[in-house]
Image 1 (cartoon, rainbow, N blue to C red):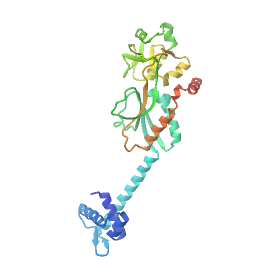
Image 2 (cartoon, rainbow, N blue to C red):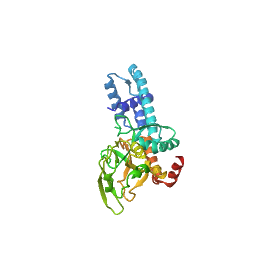
Image 3 (cartoon, rainbow, N blue to C red):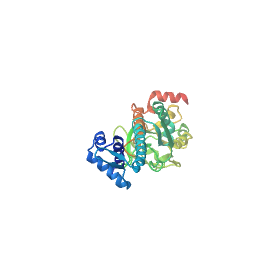
Image 4 (cartoon, rainbow, N blue to C red):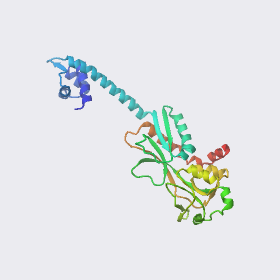
Length: 311
């Protein structure tokens, strides 16, 4: 039995004094209205209505039941209104996560603009050096940068993410710049713990592909750590352009092998389910796609000029 519907039918019968009037108002048959009330009485184990040929009236149990049913129905309507409104108008808390480097360099600024557009949303942004479990840590949206997303994840593509090979002038003062990808074997290469730790892949505009075995004395799971080490002259590093470009512009890093490109990664928005997607998640995804729609801001001349001027 649909108990909420049975409560609603019972309340209408009590309010209108009869099954026919209640059935007409609810747009159901009189037989169905009668059956709902009888099933409610069976479930409660008591008679709720006194029936006569012309009118029905409440028993003492029916009067007590009516008050409770009205409270339950009111609470149901309040819940529907509150949650339903949130599904159409973004509001409430949105819990997000991303990498430390991307969060600091670009997502924080994007979120600030989103909050200006949607002031009823409160973002809880968690930056981490690991892939966060969305269910266990109650995360609504994860921004992940990868070349191979788990096919079991629900995700939306936000933007591409290029990488470059670079080193500091201090390192290159003591080491000859690599002339081609294979020359990297002779260099101290700073690598990521989770991918590309022992091999770097490249391709060029002619369609050639090269895989190089690399090694070095530093491995880290955060791009910003590798960048700081490269700035200190430790070795050659592969960095996302969102970190590298401002440093290349101000001369702190020098791009190497510009004719060879590491595989392009993708910035993804990962979330739990496409069904009943909260308005805050939906609008944040739409906003981030729009934010990056004209090309990544860290690769636009105006942004790079402004960033350089702030350093």
